[in-house]
Length: 312
Image 1 (cartoon, rainbow, N blue to C red):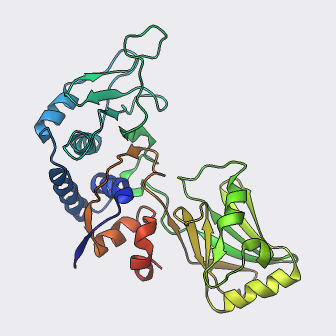
Image 2: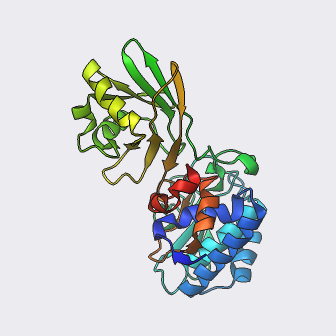
Image 3: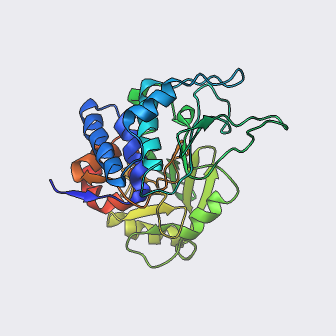
């Protein structure tokens, strides 16, 4: 299969999969992809330079520095990419699994020095870099690497009740509940072959703890939605105008009061809050590798058209 340059925003998904995906063969392939990517960036330091620095760290009394083997491997790749000719990043932050919260961690500088931001008022190193390259392995969801992530395919259901049709679907772990979530979904969601907005179709979006709920608001809305269900169209619940963070649901006509629907999350690299690696160059990847990643992580929005049939 032909490889192609992936969107740079997809780098966090590829790098995370290279070290934590349950498929050992895919991990090995993606690690080589990551290494080739770093080499193209022309890093200042070797793997041993970065690894020796990390292994020599013990942390502080308040913040012991503890990483798993996979964490160290990804941290080495990340720091080499940060301190390369094609990156102007000055600091790379690796946060211990023992650290509580998102602050602190080991900060590595571009001249291969390191320090720990101090949290008390008169500390010498109080600057806590948030921008640039950051790795917080404690925020990887779950502890069992074989079941590290929520399923790519959402468990969407269609219910029929006295008020019409109700679709319920869990939202991805990368989404955060808030007063604006339902509003954003109401504004940006759409049906694949419809020009009307959800408001014009009479569809109402609400949120429950961990769930997005879409329901028809009138008999007219039921009739409109049934036409799209009969054609097997796709409902895209999107948080933004471009649909980058979304849930795609394949509609179908219910036979009973409850129907399970095929559905799929899509995401962005920015949404992965455990890994930040802004870089202008993407990692080369093949279609079958995208499918492998998307069987475990929500796929990047730029991959969906290419691998939709394999996933759904």
